[in-house]
Structure formats: structure tokens, C-alpha cells
Length: 202
Image (tube, rainbow, N blue to C red; front, side, top):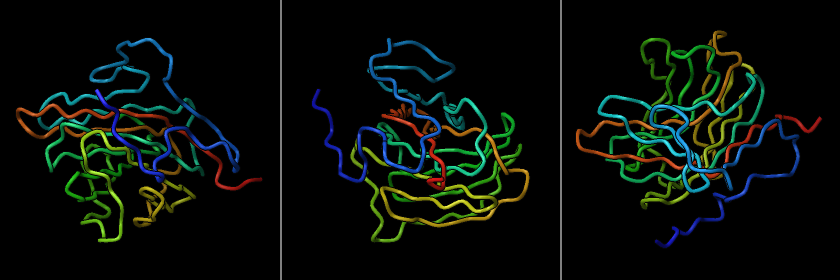
């Protein structure tokens, strides 16, 4: 199978330049294995699989809670229906309490607070100048700059929006997620790399 081409805004290796790197995670060279429900290492990547309509599969990658940090990852999705979201979460303080940023291949975005129920902070369609690669297996880079109550979301190097969150979400773990909605669908998310960096060089 031919690997999909990747655009320059979604590098296949994590950055090494300042600010300081807090955590870098890659899966190249690791043996294929199950990690959890719908989560595995496969082909040198972290892989999330849909687990049925209405189920969101998520996996925290960080080993320590993050406060002020840049969360950065390159992912590629395939098999999703237009309504199925994929993306990142951050500041997870409990299994059911976290912040999500999801995109769909039809360019809809949703930024939500999860705390037993979902509270949408922002939703809409990407502006025409925003880049989202929608071919199956195409690479997209999700970046979240988290400073205090302010989160800035960056897609493929371009700022999407910023949101403010309440003090319950001051810090926490970060990771990736995949949404399954279609009854007969089989969405899949592959993670090339995942990184957390300090906000400032010092």
C-alpha cells in the first residue's frame, strides 16, 4: 500500500527546537500490541479504532499532568463519516472531565468541556483559508497552546480560535480521541507522534 503524502504543515517527526520539550512520544519500532479498548500500537503508530455508534475512544499520552504547555501532535484519520470527529483532549483531571477539540472531514469543529455531560464552548465551520487535509490517511497537525484559563487552538500551523475555561481545568493529562457515530462505520485514527513543550523558552 502506498503511504499518503504529507504536507509541510504536518511534519512526520516531532520538533526539537526550543521551547523546551517536556515529553515526546513516538511508537516507531515498537511491537504491535493492544493498549486498551480500541487502542493499540500498530505499524509503528498509536492507533485508535471506533468502538460503536455513540462511543468516543480516547487515550491519554502524557505521563504527568500539564498546566501551561503546548500540546502538539500529527494524526491521520480514515474510515470516518462526515459527522465523526477526531482530534485532541487536554487538562483531563478525571476520566470524565476534560477539554476536547474535534474536527470532522467536512470541516466542522467543536470545542467542548466534558464533565459527565458535554458543554460546547465553540462550534462552527472552518474559515475558507484554514487548511484541513481530508483525504483518507492524510496527515493533520493539531496544536493546543494552554496558558492559564486561555487555550489557543492551531490546525496545520494556522490559529483556529481561542477559548477561556474555568478553574476546574487548570491542569491535567492530554491525549488523542476518535468519535464513532455511523452504525456500520469503522473509523480509525493513527498518531505519528505526540509532544508537550513548555510555553516559554526559559
